[in-house]
Length: 326
Image (cartoon, rainbow, N blue to C red; front, side, top):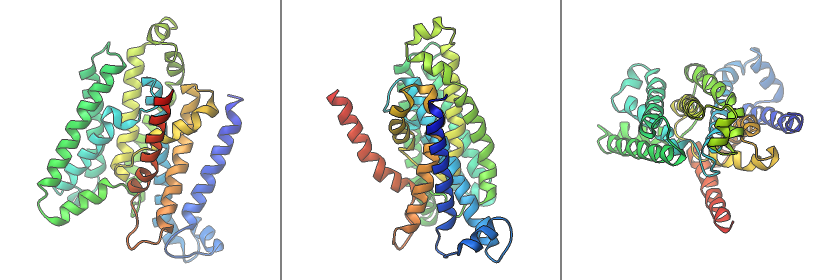
C-alpha cells in the first residue's frame, strides 16, 4: 500500500480538480466568488449550482468510478486486458431495462421506474451469466455466457427501437442510449448511489482473491480462495455498480477498458492494487469528458457515450494490435 499511496494521492487530487472544473464550466459563466457562495447555499447562483451543476458533477464522478472499478475487477477475474463490463452482458441488459421503461411510458408516469428497471436488467443479466456458465465454469464459459446474454439484450433493445410507438419515444430512447449526465438531479443520484456503493464494496473486497487468481485457479484454490464464490462476487458487484451507473446515465462505453489499462503499469500489474486507482481514474475521465462536451462549440451538446467511444475505439484497436505483436 505504501507504493500505491503516492498514486492514490495524485489521482485523488486530480478528482478534486476535475470536480472543480465540472462545477465551474457551464453555459452560464459564474464568477468564482458566486460559485463558491452558491455551493454553500448563498448568493443568487445557489439554485444553479446546487440543483443543476452539483448533481451533474457528483453523478459523473460516481458513474466514472463505477465503470472504472468494474472494468479493473473483470480484467482481473478474466485475466484479460481486453475485458470490460460489456463482456458479461451487464451494460447491454441494464440498457434494455431502461429502454423498456421508456418504451412503455413507465418513466414518464413514475420517474424511478427508469433506474429501477435498469438495475433489474443488470441483475437479471448477472444471474443468467452465472447460471449459464455453471458453478464450476472457467473463464471461457463465463465469457461465452456473457456474449450470449449481451447479444440477446442488444437484439431486444433493437426490437424496441424498431417498434417505437412514435418518433418522440424513439428519439428519447436513442438519446438515452447515447449516455449523458445532463439534466440529472439529486433524485437520480439518490436512486443509483446505494447500489453503486454496494457494488463497489463487493468489488473492492475481492482484491486479495484477484491477486491470487493471477497464479491460476488451482493455485488460488490451494491458497484458500473460493474461486466460484469470487467469480459470483465480482459478477454481482459489477451488476450492481454498472447497472446503477447505466440506469442513471445511459450507456457509456470503454471507460472500464481504457482506465485500468493506463493505470496497470503504475500498480505493479496486480489486479487487487489496481481496483481503487481505476475507480479514481474512471471518475476523472467521465468528469473531464463531461467538461469537454460543454466546451465543444456544437449546436446541441455532445453525449458522453459518443465522446468515450471516439476516444476508446482507437485505443481498443491500438491495444489489440499491441497484443497481437506480442
